[in-house]
Length: 253
Image 1 (spheres, helix red, strand yellow):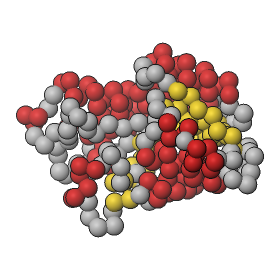
Image 2 (cartoon, one colour):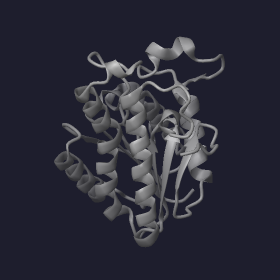
Image 3 (spheres, rainbow, N blue to C red):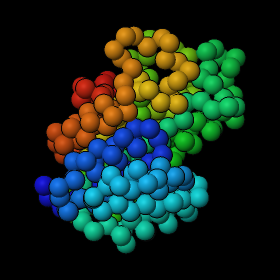
Image 4 (cartoon, rainbow, N blue to C red):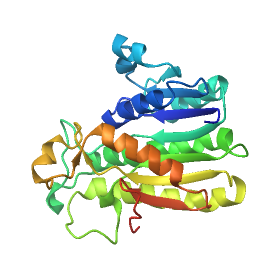
């Protein structure tokens, strides 16, 4: 294994926690992997059970919010503490519902306030991370940047309708990633952008909708983490954005 630094952003999600644990387990017998986790809530990483688990070099960055100034400051900290070349950045932000909003079932449910909130979490925030990370990633070793999106962001695959804000925010993220990939192919050829659909994972995000999930299609966060890390390793840097599901299969844009 080569020396590497891996960055997980939005590290308090269930999949992010599983990714952190898997990365640490994979690096258990090595001293050449540094993991940097970034979140507004680092409680999980401060627990004694997690502290006992890790043998890799773990660094955490606490952010107050995901406004641009705070993101820029966090990236500056990443640049300062990164011990090795950053080989992977995984951006785990996502919002489907909360106490005040639910996915729309019909046009009458559409709300400008809810749409703005979902768009901010699922599209604007990941894009701001990509904006500020690119200068410290470009021109160095190979780096793969994964942004969590969703299959429902596929325009050509939309057969059910509904979920207007969530679908639109993920579709917008996909468009931004494809545009960024065109630019990076010219000025940062070492960076590969991956739009990732983790499938329906047993987490708070999917909890209200799990009753409609077919048997065998509700995944544990540990399963998704292993799948993602394998997919990232196998994906080649080709100057394009890839839209992949949990099996590594291509999803139509």
